[in-house]
Length: 409
View 1 (spheres, rainbow, N blue to C red):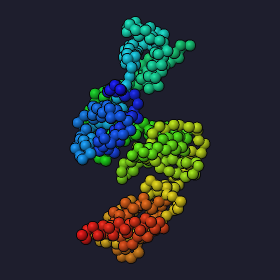
View 2 (view 1 turned 180 degrees about the horizontal axis):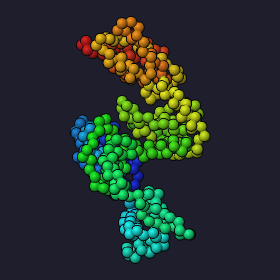
View 3 (view 1 turned 30 degrees about the vertical axis):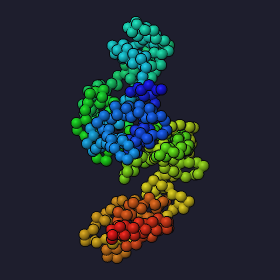
View 4 (view 1 turned 60 degrees about the vertical axis):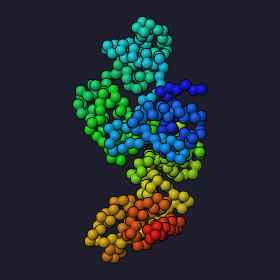
């Protein structure tokens, strides 16, 4: 029987539970079938501890359903950041952390041997020099301390780039951090700094704030590293219900963010199929970086050359180029904003004035199905809709017919 611990070693585990049960969610205890009920209870307790007042529940026919409820437009700080602050540590980790910073905080530049001796004398415990060296290397990689070579010895000291020193040179930096934590990817870094500096966000709230993005930031970091270093990748993709697991490989080219839904997508060039595909970031797990790809730059250029034909996230099926023509009635005296929308949101589609109050919008895309939601926002003004993908056109008229029948009743 597993013992319950508040802290976790593997972030993927807590991320999956948060998404499956509390964001995709509204599942009851009986819906949990992947592991034992006790495991579910442990994860539920852990997430309730992280989320506090944001955890809600309601009783339905299937039992007690749990979910996260929050008004993102009023959040001073994303409560999901708490998941990043839950990593477990050993007794040695915490002891070395405080002794190292205390000893090096007195303007000292010490070798591993001297550091180890001082830590042992103060703590009364015996540490292996290799253990201290590994911790120093970890902190040097994080920028907390710096390592300087003097003759044959490596001397360690505290880094000069502390946040307190940065605040002195840039007094408004604290306000910038408050804005950063809610406005861009990797906002959890700003949250860590605010905790350390005892800052509270009393200034900014954000419209269209997607709090769940922080659960994908670990994956995003791996993908951006691969794009920057022109590396191929292999990753595991899991569908929303968790019933289908697939492994894909290819060359990451770009990360898109949907202006409509806020979802983030990886644009991947698959060399076998010789074309681009988009994958949702919240479905991606376990990204592995592979070999350097010499053609990564060319794929970037190819994508930029084809972006004007991508209306949503799809690069289409076998018929790579589809044409959509929409004839609209627009009252030129009163509905000029409709023409503004066609130009602003039509992604470069051609707008022609056929006659007074009648306009024709034409666009070539990879997948006209992506245009359907946008086209339907012009319902009531569409005179005629035609296109090379007859399935999409028929579905549009079928939906309009059903809507008419519903409202007539």
